Length: 225
Image 1 (cartoon, helix red, strand yellow):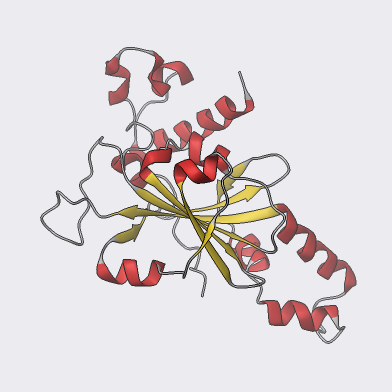
Image 2 (cartoon, rainbow, N blue to C red):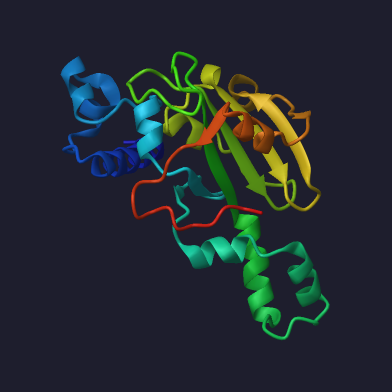
């Protein structure tokens, strides 16, 4: 079993737990078994699956592992404002010594922070509603990172079944505030990203995007900004 399959199993187990379904073998749930297996958990990449899976994730560049961003302390460490980090680098932050600063810098280099947004279902009568069904969902994957040299999160896109033809990818460098975009196909195949404004807030306000919902009791992680 490949590393991607192991990660996929973990995602499926999370999804099964979040939906109250039974956990079956990886091949059965992944679609290698008869269609009846799809009744066990929603198909990966479907609107129902993305509604059940967490909206916020951390991705480790070296290993390609990723996990839900539910640890509030890890979240706060990674999102510490650059102004605070700059004061620490100049020795002006009393509560951040050299060792703590080195650890913060290392964790920022090692991790990327990912958010998943669902596109509004055009067939839904209510613009603010989402059709919770097994149809593939269109989504926006926003990748936040500190600096330009980071791992490619194609594994994340593939394992969650987001579908290259149904996904847009935005990469934001928090150091430079640079925002770049690509289609899923362009991103996964390594084509250059295109500079474009960060318009997520506007799309969310219009009702075109909604964050994929965290399971009950797991949404205590604050939002960036």
